[in-house]
Length: 496
Image (cartoon, rainbow, N blue to C red; front, side, top):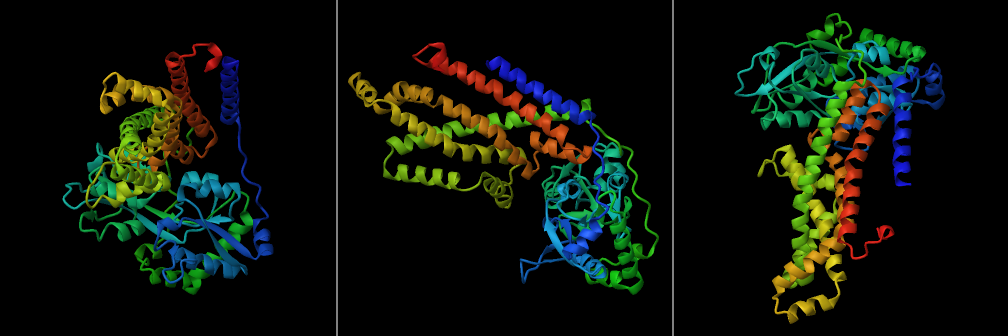
């Protein structure tokens, strides 16, 4: 029956993957969006508050409101449409998929006009012309992007800079936040960061540790993204932008945020071209997934090797220690069980950086190991308490001291009793390792997200990711089951 279940699972997976690879998703039929906006009385636009000023950020005086030059531009457009504007906060890499899904009407958040987006969306006329700026460390010898041919350059996923680095065959690291990219530049993990001048001027050019190189790597434009078929809405938005230019309101808004420059008076550049505009899930992508799976497995294994001794020490302290040892171990357990592991990773990696700077892999192993050590402690404590009292009394009768009894009699039995829960915890740790992507480690889930953005499809990468997690976890569960049977006193086949 078990073999039939496994066969059925992979048969269903294969069918879904074939359907996803061969299927074609048509563009959203959203031609009536403008009428819906007017009937609703508001236009909903997606953006990411984490991008911060001057794009979109929380108002310091009233955190329930957002401010920024794009907020002002959308407010002016909404008034010309005769409606209100409502900001819908989402993560930046997911804005385009969520727009296609119908979560909001338009995207406006530093959305760059690229060939890939032009094929995928209905793009408005530009409202800002940006320049790609290269940032290096203060003492770095680099003078241009060509000097970084064999170095690693950071950027944001899904940006025009991302495509420039990929097209030029330059090693790059894609991040989901610009702060992470510049942080990696400061600590020497990467050699440069390529991002829009709006971001570079605010985040890096005034930093005493960094230096923005003069000149422009490339130019591009910010546009408003709409679903394919929203031609009526696109014309209305283009007319509103034209009217803002003629009246000088657009210039006024840009000057308010110190964004007005000579580029805004020149003809906008054409839509950025990418040599790899059309991509699909191929053998190269599969190799990247396999590499990310190894990262996931290695991180999980090393973190669990750290969690086991921590858990044993804490469990022994709670069961056999004195009042102080019991209190300290309980305090540790409640702290790490009572706070989210994501928060713990942020504190270890970002919060402790001024005092103890860890690399991303070291921070991940330490964070997951400390967190799961607390859970393992409770597993081992329960196992120790489940051992009959007669075992301790028999050890004393044989002349064994407390530590000898613990080492030779109690711990071996406790570990055997704890083995099923330990296996479950390791599988959980394997899945929780996906959280390390928040501190710029590209593991399996992060690779799926990158592939989804890059390929404009989350179904195939998601199915491949799920299959690889299954491939990693199922053999571990089977190995643990066999080990349980071998260690159990009852060797009947149906016992385990």
